[in-house]
Image 1 (tube, rainbow, N blue to C red):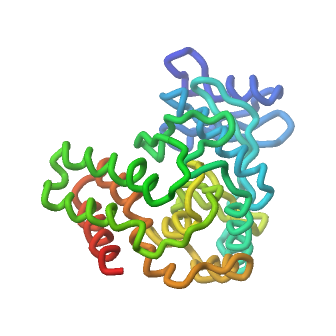
Image 2: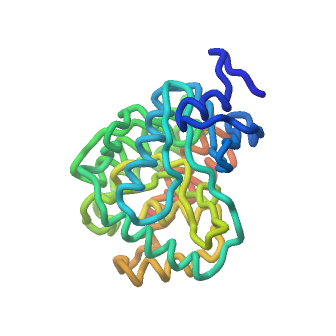
Image 3: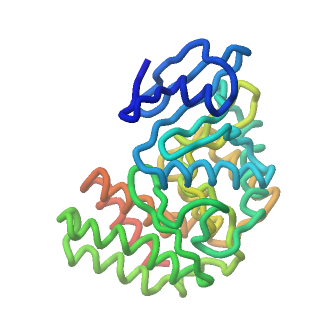
Length: 290
């Protein structure tokens, strides 16, 4: 049994937030454990090192669930260190599940947000995307918000860390200046998962695709879809077909994928180094050619 620095364990957290006795515990990764309960259910228990990140994830899961659009694990409870959610039994991805995921994402995005950058209700402004800080500062204008609160903070840190040279950063800065003229359609803020790469899509044994580990906030719906393209997703074209059946995308959306990928690519540049910097520069140059 893994004991945290505060003397608690995943099993103890599961007992506290579900009201059931623990029947067993299995460590999945450094921060995540599965805990079996005395009624036969299994819950996931995550141990966090930042209370704001734990609160942001719990609030994000509940905000996504409130849309009733895509399945997400139910939150049993959380505190400053522990988050306890339902366990999702996994299966194999299928075209039918992918089409349903696309339709569900369209409905999720349509559920909306109060503003670009708006955090989920009860979520902190200072949140995280993966291991990186992410500030949720509400704004009404998407191009300016995306540049100031998503792209440029990570660009500056990459330059400060020496991962990007100043002359290279200028390419990304030019793309940010030109954002209003690059054809991104003016749309209301969408309710985004916010970190929608393949690893955060679970293909359930129930034949549905489930979303986990959100960095939820208000944003542009094309951003979630661009993230799905970044690291690949099983049956991606079926996901997109389902999405467009429910909510057609504006012309030229495929050409804008790189523009929306600037944010996650710069996050990965800060976290993992130069290889992602080259991809971010390629995305910025592609955006400048629109």
